[in-house]
Image: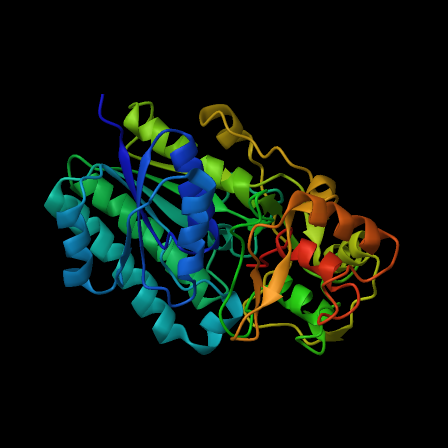
Length: 393
Protein backbone atom coordinates (compact mmCIF):
# COMPACT_ATOMS: atom_id res chain seq x y z
CA UNK A 1 0.00 0.00 0.00
CA UNK A 2 1.32 3.41 -0.97
CA UNK A 3 2.24 5.65 1.96
CA UNK A 4 0.58 9.04 2.27
CA UNK A 5 2.90 11.95 1.54
CA UNK A 6 2.74 15.33 3.30
CA UNK A 7 4.19 18.60 2.04
CA UNK A 8 5.53 20.67 4.95
CA UNK A 9 5.84 24.33 3.95
CA UNK A 10 8.22 26.15 6.27
CA UNK A 11 9.58 22.72 7.16
CA UNK A 12 13.09 23.99 7.93
CA UNK A 13 11.69 26.14 10.74
CA UNK A 14 11.39 25.37 14.42
CA UNK A 15 7.96 23.73 14.52
CA UNK A 16 8.08 22.53 10.92
CA UNK A 17 11.26 20.50 11.36
CA UNK A 18 9.93 18.79 14.48
CA UNK A 19 6.67 18.01 12.70
CA UNK A 20 8.57 16.49 9.77
CA UNK A 21 10.31 14.14 12.20
CA UNK A 22 7.06 13.06 13.84
CA UNK A 23 5.34 12.54 10.48
CA UNK A 24 8.13 10.25 9.32
CA UNK A 25 8.09 8.41 12.64
CA UNK A 26 4.35 7.87 12.14
CA UNK A 27 4.92 6.31 8.71
CA UNK A 28 4.32 9.23 6.35
CA UNK A 29 6.53 10.39 3.51
CA UNK A 30 7.51 14.05 3.76
CA UNK A 31 8.60 16.80 1.38
CA UNK A 32 9.98 20.02 2.87
CA UNK A 33 9.76 23.39 1.15
CA UNK A 34 11.27 26.54 2.69
CA UNK A 35 12.85 29.77 1.47
CA UNK A 36 15.32 29.74 4.42
CA UNK A 37 14.61 33.39 5.18
CA UNK A 38 14.45 32.70 8.92
CA UNK A 39 15.70 29.13 9.08
CA UNK A 40 18.68 27.07 8.06
CA UNK A 41 19.35 24.06 5.87
CA UNK A 42 20.99 22.49 8.93
CA UNK A 43 17.49 21.84 10.26
CA UNK A 44 16.70 19.72 7.21
CA UNK A 45 19.95 17.83 7.74
CA UNK A 46 18.92 17.34 11.36
CA UNK A 47 15.62 15.83 10.27
CA UNK A 48 17.48 13.48 7.93
CA UNK A 49 19.91 12.40 10.66
CA UNK A 50 17.18 11.80 13.22
CA UNK A 51 14.97 9.78 10.87
CA UNK A 52 17.56 8.13 8.65
CA UNK A 53 15.49 9.26 5.66
CA UNK A 54 16.83 11.39 2.82
CA UNK A 55 13.92 13.82 3.05
CA UNK A 56 13.37 15.77 -0.19
CA UNK A 57 13.93 19.51 0.21
CA UNK A 58 12.99 22.32 -2.18
CA UNK A 59 14.15 25.88 -1.63
CA UNK A 60 11.23 28.00 -2.77
CA UNK A 61 9.25 31.00 -1.60
CA UNK A 62 5.58 30.15 -1.10
CA UNK A 63 4.75 33.71 -2.16
CA UNK A 64 6.24 32.93 -5.59
CA UNK A 65 3.35 31.03 -7.14
CA UNK A 66 5.30 29.76 -10.14
CA UNK A 67 8.15 28.42 -8.00
CA UNK A 68 5.68 26.88 -5.57
CA UNK A 69 3.71 25.32 -8.43
CA UNK A 70 6.82 23.47 -9.54
CA UNK A 71 6.87 21.73 -6.15
CA UNK A 72 3.28 20.60 -6.71
CA UNK A 73 4.21 19.35 -10.17
CA UNK A 74 7.27 17.44 -8.97
CA UNK A 75 5.86 15.61 -5.93
CA UNK A 76 2.79 13.45 -5.40
CA UNK A 77 1.52 14.42 -1.94
CA UNK A 78 -2.09 14.37 -0.74
CA UNK A 79 -1.77 16.66 2.30
CA UNK A 80 -0.14 19.96 3.21
CA UNK A 81 0.87 21.39 6.58
CA UNK A 82 1.41 25.12 6.14
CA UNK A 83 3.89 26.74 8.52
CA UNK A 84 5.55 29.22 6.16
CA UNK A 85 4.90 32.66 7.65
CA UNK A 86 6.51 35.57 9.47
CA UNK A 87 5.74 35.06 13.13
CA UNK A 88 6.95 37.73 15.58
CA UNK A 89 4.21 39.80 17.24
CA UNK A 90 6.38 42.81 18.04
CA UNK A 91 8.06 42.88 14.63
CA UNK A 92 4.69 42.71 12.88
CA UNK A 93 3.66 45.98 14.52
CA UNK A 94 6.61 47.76 12.92
CA UNK A 95 6.43 45.85 9.62
CA UNK A 96 2.71 45.33 8.93
CA UNK A 97 2.85 45.32 5.12
CA UNK A 98 5.60 42.72 5.13
CA UNK A 99 3.52 40.49 7.38
CA UNK A 100 0.30 40.90 5.38
CA UNK A 101 2.08 40.24 2.11
CA UNK A 102 4.01 37.19 3.26
CA UNK A 103 1.44 35.49 5.44
CA UNK A 104 -1.64 36.05 3.28
CA UNK A 105 -0.12 35.58 -0.17
CA UNK A 106 1.69 32.38 0.75
CA UNK A 107 -1.48 30.88 2.22
CA UNK A 108 -3.66 31.84 -0.74
CA UNK A 109 -1.09 30.27 -3.04
CA UNK A 110 -1.29 27.05 -1.04
CA UNK A 111 -5.09 26.87 -1.28
CA UNK A 112 -5.10 27.80 -4.95
CA UNK A 113 -2.49 25.23 -5.89
CA UNK A 114 -4.20 22.52 -3.86
CA UNK A 115 -7.35 23.13 -5.90
CA UNK A 116 -5.44 23.19 -9.16
CA UNK A 117 -3.50 19.98 -8.50
CA UNK A 118 -6.22 18.05 -6.67
CA UNK A 119 -4.63 17.83 -3.21
CA UNK A 120 -7.16 17.17 -0.47
CA UNK A 121 -6.04 17.91 3.09
CA UNK A 122 -4.52 20.94 4.76
CA UNK A 123 -3.48 21.71 8.31
CA UNK A 124 -3.05 25.43 8.93
CA UNK A 125 -0.61 26.67 11.55
CA UNK A 126 -2.84 29.12 13.41
CA UNK A 127 -2.28 30.73 16.79
CA UNK A 128 -3.87 31.64 20.09
CA UNK A 129 -3.42 35.27 19.00
CA UNK A 130 -6.74 34.96 17.13
CA UNK A 131 -8.51 35.23 20.50
CA UNK A 132 -7.11 38.68 21.20
CA UNK A 133 -7.65 39.76 24.81
CA UNK A 134 -10.09 37.06 25.91
CA UNK A 135 -12.74 37.87 28.54
CA UNK A 136 -12.65 34.39 30.07
CA UNK A 137 -9.68 32.06 30.60
CA UNK A 138 -8.83 29.43 29.67
CA UNK A 139 -9.99 29.79 26.08
CA UNK A 140 -11.97 27.09 24.29
CA UNK A 141 -12.61 26.72 20.57
CA UNK A 142 -15.94 28.46 21.19
CA UNK A 143 -14.29 31.53 22.74
CA UNK A 144 -15.19 34.47 20.48
CA UNK A 145 -12.36 35.82 18.40
CA UNK A 146 -11.66 39.44 19.26
CA UNK A 147 -9.86 42.06 17.18
CA UNK A 148 -6.22 41.01 17.01
CA UNK A 149 -3.73 43.16 18.89
CA UNK A 150 -1.05 42.86 16.19
CA UNK A 151 -0.76 42.46 12.41
CA UNK A 152 0.63 38.97 13.06
CA UNK A 153 -2.51 37.97 14.95
CA UNK A 154 -4.64 39.63 12.30
CA UNK A 155 -3.03 37.54 9.54
CA UNK A 156 -3.85 34.38 11.50
CA UNK A 157 -7.48 35.44 11.80
CA UNK A 158 -7.64 36.30 8.11
CA UNK A 159 -6.04 33.01 7.05
CA UNK A 160 -8.55 31.10 9.16
CA UNK A 161 -11.33 32.97 7.35
CA UNK A 162 -9.74 32.26 3.96
CA UNK A 163 -9.54 28.56 4.85
CA UNK A 164 -13.13 28.39 6.15
CA UNK A 165 -14.56 30.15 3.09
CA UNK A 166 -12.46 28.14 0.63
CA UNK A 167 -13.51 24.84 2.14
CA UNK A 168 -17.14 25.90 1.98
CA UNK A 169 -16.83 26.89 -1.68
CA UNK A 170 -14.57 24.23 -3.20
CA UNK A 171 -15.39 20.54 -3.23
CA UNK A 172 -12.71 18.01 -2.39
CA UNK A 173 -10.86 20.03 0.23
CA UNK A 174 -10.72 19.40 3.98
CA UNK A 175 -8.88 21.50 6.53
CA UNK A 176 -7.97 21.83 10.18
CA UNK A 177 -6.70 24.98 11.88
CA UNK A 178 -4.56 24.26 14.92
CA UNK A 179 -4.57 27.22 17.29
CA UNK A 180 -1.47 26.59 19.30
CA UNK A 181 0.09 28.42 22.11
CA UNK A 182 3.79 28.92 22.95
CA UNK A 183 6.23 26.24 21.79
CA UNK A 184 9.05 25.24 24.11
CA UNK A 185 11.86 22.69 23.93
CA UNK A 186 13.44 20.61 21.21
CA UNK A 187 13.85 17.07 19.95
CA UNK A 188 15.66 14.83 22.47
CA UNK A 189 18.51 14.32 19.99
CA UNK A 190 19.32 18.07 20.10
CA UNK A 191 19.85 17.92 16.33
CA UNK A 192 17.03 20.37 15.69
CA UNK A 193 15.76 23.31 17.72
CA UNK A 194 14.89 26.99 17.51
CA UNK A 195 17.69 28.70 15.56
CA UNK A 196 16.61 32.24 14.63
CA UNK A 197 18.66 34.37 12.28
CA UNK A 198 19.86 37.76 13.51
CA UNK A 199 18.43 39.36 16.65
CA UNK A 200 15.89 36.97 18.22
CA UNK A 201 12.27 38.13 18.12
CA UNK A 202 11.15 35.53 20.66
CA UNK A 203 11.82 35.33 24.36
CA UNK A 204 13.90 32.24 24.94
CA UNK A 205 16.54 32.57 22.23
CA UNK A 206 17.12 36.02 23.70
CA UNK A 207 17.29 34.57 27.24
CA UNK A 208 19.86 32.01 26.12
CA UNK A 209 22.01 34.45 24.19
CA UNK A 210 21.95 36.88 27.14
CA UNK A 211 23.04 34.17 29.56
CA UNK A 212 25.82 33.14 27.16
CA UNK A 213 27.13 36.70 26.92
CA UNK A 214 26.14 37.23 23.29
CA UNK A 215 23.47 39.74 24.33
CA UNK A 216 24.17 42.17 27.13
CA UNK A 217 20.77 42.18 28.78
CA UNK A 218 17.32 40.63 28.47
CA UNK A 219 14.39 43.03 28.36
CA UNK A 220 11.17 41.92 30.07
CA UNK A 221 8.37 43.91 28.49
CA UNK A 222 6.30 45.19 31.38
CA UNK A 223 5.74 44.30 35.03
CA UNK A 224 2.56 46.30 35.45
CA UNK A 225 0.04 43.93 33.87
CA UNK A 226 -2.92 42.76 36.00
CA UNK A 227 -1.28 39.39 36.74
CA UNK A 228 0.17 38.01 40.00
CA UNK A 229 3.74 39.19 39.23
CA UNK A 230 2.88 41.89 36.69
CA UNK A 231 4.28 40.08 33.62
CA UNK A 232 2.44 38.44 30.72
CA UNK A 233 1.08 34.92 31.10
CA UNK A 234 1.35 32.30 28.36
CA UNK A 235 0.74 28.58 27.85
CA UNK A 236 4.05 26.85 27.05
CA UNK A 237 3.82 23.58 25.14
CA UNK A 238 6.64 21.18 24.29
CA UNK A 239 7.41 21.42 20.58
CA UNK A 240 7.46 17.62 20.15
CA UNK A 241 4.00 17.39 21.74
CA UNK A 242 2.91 20.15 19.37
CA UNK A 243 4.36 18.31 16.37
CA UNK A 244 2.42 15.19 17.30
CA UNK A 245 -0.81 17.20 17.23
CA UNK A 246 -0.16 17.92 13.53
CA UNK A 247 0.27 14.21 12.88
CA UNK A 248 -3.04 13.53 14.64
CA UNK A 249 -4.76 16.19 12.53
CA UNK A 250 -3.40 14.76 9.27
CA UNK A 251 -4.44 11.24 10.28
CA UNK A 252 -7.94 12.46 11.14
CA UNK A 253 -8.48 13.81 7.62
CA UNK A 254 -6.82 10.93 5.76
CA UNK A 255 -8.99 8.46 7.67
CA UNK A 256 -12.12 10.58 7.06
CA UNK A 257 -12.81 10.96 10.76
CA UNK A 258 -13.31 14.72 10.59
CA UNK A 259 -16.81 15.84 11.59
CA UNK A 260 -16.80 18.81 9.25
CA UNK A 261 -14.75 19.97 6.29
CA UNK A 262 -13.34 22.76 8.48
CA UNK A 263 -12.36 22.12 12.08
CA UNK A 264 -10.48 24.09 14.74
CA UNK A 265 -8.53 22.79 17.76
CA UNK A 266 -6.66 24.45 20.62
CA UNK A 267 -3.23 22.91 21.13
CA UNK A 268 -1.90 23.80 24.56
CA UNK A 269 -1.25 22.42 28.03
CA UNK A 270 -4.02 24.15 29.95
CA UNK A 271 -1.60 25.92 32.29
CA UNK A 272 -0.55 29.57 32.24
CA UNK A 273 3.00 30.60 33.25
CA UNK A 274 4.22 34.19 33.51
CA UNK A 275 7.31 35.54 31.77
CA UNK A 276 9.00 36.35 35.09
CA UNK A 277 8.16 32.89 36.43
CA UNK A 278 9.83 31.44 33.36
CA UNK A 279 12.91 33.62 33.81
CA UNK A 280 13.23 32.53 37.43
CA UNK A 281 12.78 28.87 36.47
CA UNK A 282 15.58 29.33 33.94
CA UNK A 283 17.84 30.70 36.67
CA UNK A 284 17.00 27.83 39.01
CA UNK A 285 17.55 25.09 36.43
CA UNK A 286 20.84 26.55 35.22
CA UNK A 287 22.05 27.78 38.63
CA UNK A 288 22.88 31.28 37.45
CA UNK A 289 21.59 34.84 37.64
CA UNK A 290 20.28 36.22 34.39
CA UNK A 291 21.01 39.83 33.51
CA UNK A 292 17.55 41.21 32.80
CA UNK A 293 15.69 44.48 33.21
CA UNK A 294 12.08 45.55 33.17
CA UNK A 295 11.19 47.87 30.31
CA UNK A 296 7.96 49.28 28.95
CA UNK A 297 5.21 47.16 27.49
CA UNK A 298 5.67 45.89 23.93
CA UNK A 299 3.11 46.82 21.31
CA UNK A 300 0.85 43.94 20.34
CA UNK A 301 1.24 41.85 23.50
CA UNK A 302 -1.88 40.67 25.30
CA UNK A 303 -2.05 40.29 29.08
CA UNK A 304 -2.69 36.57 29.43
CA UNK A 305 -3.76 33.53 27.44
CA UNK A 306 -3.86 29.81 28.05
CA UNK A 307 -5.80 26.94 26.55
CA UNK A 308 -8.54 24.56 27.45
CA UNK A 309 -7.24 21.63 25.34
CA UNK A 310 -10.00 19.16 26.23
CA UNK A 311 -11.60 19.21 22.76
CA UNK A 312 -8.29 18.26 21.10
CA UNK A 313 -7.71 15.66 23.82
CA UNK A 314 -11.05 14.01 23.11
CA UNK A 315 -11.39 14.41 19.33
CA UNK A 316 -7.79 14.07 18.14
CA UNK A 317 -6.77 11.57 20.78
CA UNK A 318 -3.87 13.89 21.56
CA UNK A 319 -2.62 15.54 24.71
CA UNK A 320 0.46 17.40 25.92
CA UNK A 321 2.57 14.88 27.81
CA UNK A 322 5.47 16.84 29.26
CA UNK A 323 5.10 19.16 32.23
CA UNK A 324 7.01 22.43 32.50
CA UNK A 325 9.23 20.92 35.21
CA UNK A 326 10.11 18.00 32.95
CA UNK A 327 10.88 20.33 30.07
CA UNK A 328 13.24 22.46 32.12
CA UNK A 329 15.08 19.77 34.09
CA UNK A 330 17.68 17.18 33.18
CA UNK A 331 18.31 18.35 29.62
CA UNK A 332 22.04 19.00 29.84
CA UNK A 333 22.87 15.57 28.50
CA UNK A 334 20.97 16.31 25.31
CA UNK A 335 22.19 19.62 24.04
CA UNK A 336 25.52 21.22 23.33
CA UNK A 337 25.94 24.32 21.27
CA UNK A 338 28.43 26.42 19.43
CA UNK A 339 28.70 29.90 18.09
CA UNK A 340 28.63 30.00 14.33
CA UNK A 341 29.95 32.63 11.96
CA UNK A 342 26.73 34.63 12.32
CA UNK A 343 27.36 35.06 16.05
CA UNK A 344 24.14 33.22 16.95
CA UNK A 345 23.71 29.98 18.87
CA UNK A 346 23.30 26.75 16.98
CA UNK A 347 23.36 23.13 17.99
CA UNK A 348 26.65 21.34 17.66
CA UNK A 349 27.37 17.98 16.14
CA UNK A 350 26.30 14.80 17.84
CA UNK A 351 28.53 14.38 20.87
CA UNK A 352 30.02 11.18 22.34
CA UNK A 353 28.01 9.93 25.29
CA UNK A 354 31.05 9.60 27.56
CA UNK A 355 32.00 13.27 26.96
CA UNK A 356 28.42 14.39 27.59
CA UNK A 357 28.51 12.56 30.91
CA UNK A 358 31.87 14.15 31.80
CA UNK A 359 30.63 17.63 30.89
CA UNK A 360 27.44 17.11 32.86
CA UNK A 361 29.31 16.01 35.98
CA UNK A 362 31.87 18.84 35.77
CA UNK A 363 29.24 21.51 35.22
CA UNK A 364 27.08 20.32 38.12
CA UNK A 365 30.15 20.67 40.34
CA UNK A 366 30.53 24.27 39.19
CA UNK A 367 33.56 23.63 36.95
CA UNK A 368 33.95 24.56 33.31
CA UNK A 369 33.89 21.36 31.25
CA UNK A 370 37.23 20.50 29.66
CA UNK A 371 37.35 21.61 26.06
CA UNK A 372 34.82 24.41 26.52
CA UNK A 373 37.03 27.21 27.82
CA UNK A 374 36.32 29.53 24.86
CA UNK A 375 32.79 29.87 26.22
CA UNK A 376 31.71 31.85 29.29
CA UNK A 377 31.27 30.13 32.65
CA UNK A 378 27.90 28.36 32.86
CA UNK A 379 27.47 28.45 29.09
CA UNK A 380 27.14 24.70 28.83
CA UNK A 381 24.20 24.74 31.20
CA UNK A 382 22.77 27.72 29.38
CA UNK A 383 22.90 25.79 26.14
CA UNK A 384 20.74 23.11 27.62
CA UNK A 385 17.96 25.59 27.93
CA UNK A 386 18.35 26.77 24.35
CA UNK A 387 16.43 23.71 23.37
CA UNK A 388 14.17 23.64 26.38
CA UNK A 389 13.42 27.17 25.35
CA UNK A 390 10.29 29.19 25.07
CA UNK A 391 8.94 30.98 22.06
CA UNK A 392 6.91 33.86 23.48
CA UNK A 393 4.59 34.51 20.60
